[in-house]
Image 1 (cartoon, rainbow, N blue to C red):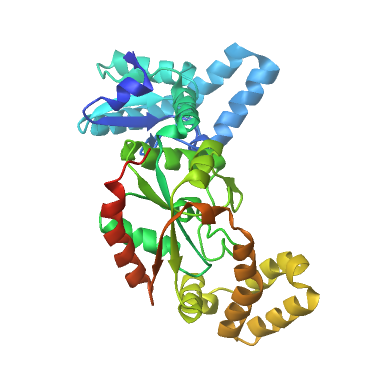
Image 2: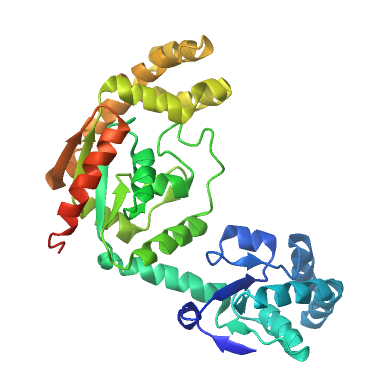
Length: 346
């Protein structure tokens, strides 16, 4: 067993991070790509915590040993399998007892692995530091009215090899009042920041494309420094005809495939903006399957007026790209990108 910092672990030829924390701790956040081999289940960890609180350290350690012992043959076998593929780096919450005990057990059977200094907390500190030095990030922001298709555009640009940060994809939210419908639950704030970190550090300071967002996406917040860089960034303004934007929204939200009760619930939250009579009219459209009319009304009377009030981005527009569909916008951005990245970005 050898202690190693997170920075040095990144320089290993093929680091394989093994997260031995409980499943709940792992789900909250973890090093990107880490494999969860928990020493204790969530319930076991809770029991050990209670024993520690009411009976003391020694009794808690004994309880932990009782839980761990039957699992050791399986855990060792799994470590051996991963060790054939790269350098094992084991970590727990803060480089404490769990990782120390496990790596010592492995050493006793002649299996030598790295132990991450500071555990997950050292990784988390690196993520926080990264965003505190966000001046090394060079976003180029795509703006456009609701329905222009920015998330799909970014996906298509990524397929072409352009550097992108797809915020709505990472956040599992479309950034609107109905943005959560039909998607997986949002990650935790820490998990979101870790995913952002993993994408951005690979860009190594190169300019990247990102959609224009408010700082809050669903329940999640963009790191303050990243959001500030986006506010100051060059802007590409995208334009599509209203008819095409309606078609894009109907495709993205799959209104006909999601129980309308979820749309009706979300609709209530914008009563303060539209008034009760308009919300009741929109609710009636939903109930009668008039999804086109529902979407068109929302665009004209809610989304577009909100968009037009947010004019801060106007001073940074470097290019306006218009088209009749998403593919035309993708082509226009791709053509402009080479020209843009040849400039002095400072």
